[in-house]
Image (cartoon, rainbow, N blue to C red; front, side, top):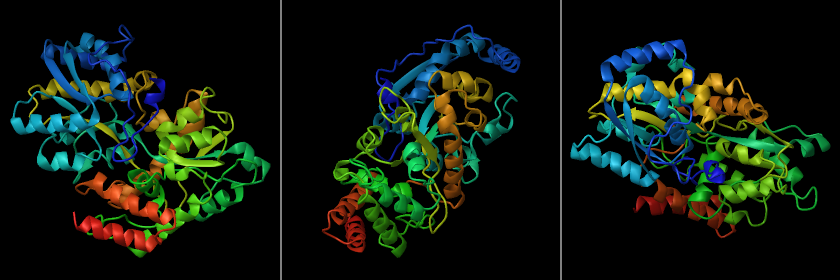
Length: 446
């Protein structure tokens, strides 16, 4: 269970899967002392909605489990009964869409992947909550939620459609002991990242430069996406959606990645995020570039021989600038909710600044500036500063109007095709340009 909480899907979503999560709310913090502002607010809510039942559609996830642990207190305070419908990720999207299409209105609040948000908002599946946010109680403090999340994932055409409950970006982990030993500094540019990887590759027995994802197909595409936006605006024009897969900038990005892969372990062609992580935690690579959500495993001495030798830095800058991955989950009101006001009270409570410490203590993924700016544990002190800076770089991408994972139909299938041809370039069967040209041609034929 612990390991599953720290794993993430290869690409397309960044859910941290939590196996065996209960589907009924069961509080572990009942009786906790409440902030006076929360107490006064809850008293008012209870006067209006005592005895009301709401149903929430969600997927198994650490943040879901954290909210479940807090549900008993919420019900005691507000009188609102909370029912959970928790399913796997693919089923969640289908169930939310079917509920909307059928008009049954079984759900009052829904957990939404950031990559569904644009479609859900445009189709009217989730409600605009902008006015509700403007009138939220002081203890909520929406501005404290990281702008990368609130603006980059929860807004569509200037309107807010949810509140972030989990998110992540990608950053570089590096071996402090090796960097100190050889008088090196962590990379600030993509050029430096490649040069450092080349320097450390083979510097000591069994040591490689870095580790990333490169398994044939979608995993290879995911690894490339980690750094591609430092070189280009993506595989598809972010404004028009036009194909630009084989653009000179993308060819440059792929060639860079192919050069970088030469500094990685010989079996990197089989690497998903798990194998890339293992190469780093076993001491076989000097650097690692992947999801912030995985960092706890790196710093856990039970799973990492380098736990006390690692530091983290944000993604390096490239020819196009300094950007970062951005993904995560939000909690939204279903547009046809029968008990929207009671459901909004639930969202307000669970995602508020006043409850943030309890939320993260219960395993919820931090989404607030105040949380990341005030690390409490030794592990948080190692990861939070770099995570906060990396999320700032991720906002640069959304500021450019670019979604880290493109908002195109059949995305997984298209990324798999791109990854397949890039893998052919990796083994020397195609050039970078040929690989992307063939990927573009096949995708156009879909």
